[in-house]
Image 1 (cartoon, helix red, strand yellow):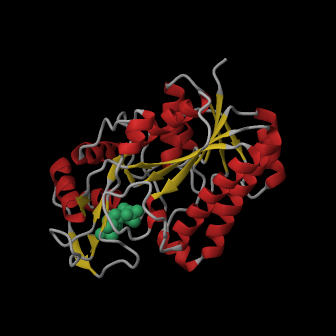
Image 2 (image 1 turned 45 degrees about the vertical axis):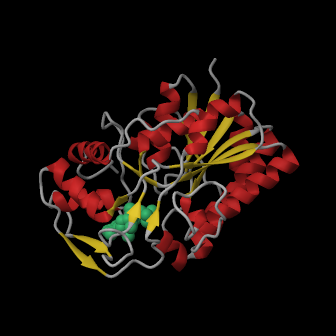
Length: 331
Ligand code: UDP
């Protein structure tokens, strides 16, 4: 029987796309989710157990029962602004939840984990493209909690032989190319879904957070990566761990190229054939002008290459999902 992969947070955006990719790669999956922000409709019929990471006894029982070959851990809160207002919720969910998961893994002899980290652990980098060796100095509680989890992985590796890969995501975007899965956050705060909804007339004009940044067109530059390419990277990371590669590794996961907010708006207009109503407002606190990742390391060590990196492709796949599911997943 193929190895079983436990996908923690597999009802969420990146988790659901990864669970599908793992199954497409011939692995078995079991999603573990508390459905606080994920959707049952995103499981696409895959197996699931409903467990809250903060419920340590039930989590430990789930690991002991299923004894997966590896864990892929997505479950976390991920909004910078919310983390500033309510850091306790972020430390509890992200750090305590990950601690419980690692302790349950140790108790059941599960040694392999792929962890969702973030470019927010770099804070405001001195240089772009950002390499993995760049100092990690987060500038908000969300980034602090993810960096704390990376420390946990390192220390559990040393003490208990946990083998880990942290994937530091840049800006996840797009949707399953067959539009079976897509992006549905409530509330939605991300640029591409908001720009699509504005173009479709389903939301008010997009607010552009600042046009006075030191960038060529004055708007912020980010490294948008297709969620299907992200999912592929998780499959490679799992396969690397299952092949027995040890240690505590970290890789950037972006496209290595940047697009400005103005460029994203132009892409949305091209793809949808509609103008994107928008207006320029004040900067959003905590937004660095330019975040672009170097992906040389993951290409070199895991053989990952993005297959859908063009911005118009990312936007087109997101638009196909939006058109097919204008209200997102059914509740
Ligand atoms: N952004 C914007 N208006 C919005 C949402 C986002 O101008 O309504 C900008 C934001 O300032 C950033 C970029 O779009 O420069 C991407 O933001 P998003 O929230 O999608 O991802 P983040 O970079 O915060 O992870």
